[in-house]
Length: 196
Image (cartoon, rainbow, N blue to C red; front, side, top):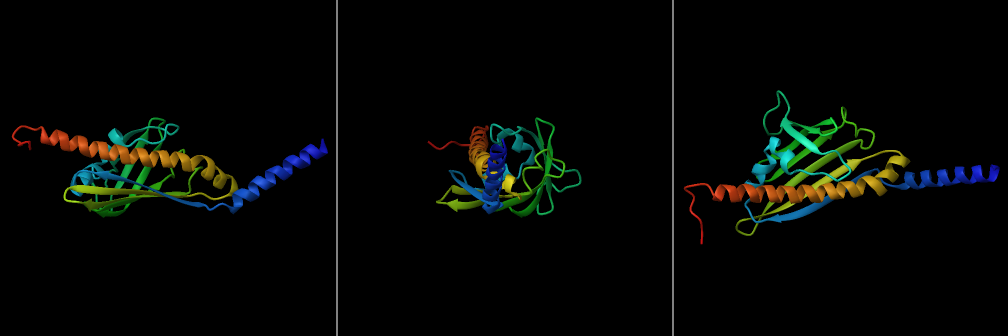
């Protein structure tokens, strides 16, 4: 029995030692090409209430049900804060770090009131829009998060990271689809000429 207990203790210590060697910071990025000008993609990014329609996370995560500008916050701009509400009642705020219309939007997520606060110490995201060709946009969406402690580093490596990768890919897909849907709806409005 003592040998089994000693073996278990050694196994746990080995796993914790492995976790201690892993980095606490994880940075991921995804790219998408959108056949619309940067301003058309920016219109989707700048529309806080619209996020709940197109921004999907990983399957195992709560679903975003509402996104809005915080009370007293400007509706966009460097000093703005967005509030996100999820189907489990969770709420987190996202403070804008950079706001360059048609070019760049980045934000830091505050998990203070969130049920996810035990998982991530910090999370920052950034979306860059670069003109491509005459009418296209290359979109780069970057996510950087930090965890501490050997157990959280192991969770990050084997669980959290894969979910963030899925969420990143879905965010890009949703952004592209929403921008294209808005452009198509705008083209169908009466009085707009259609190109043959």
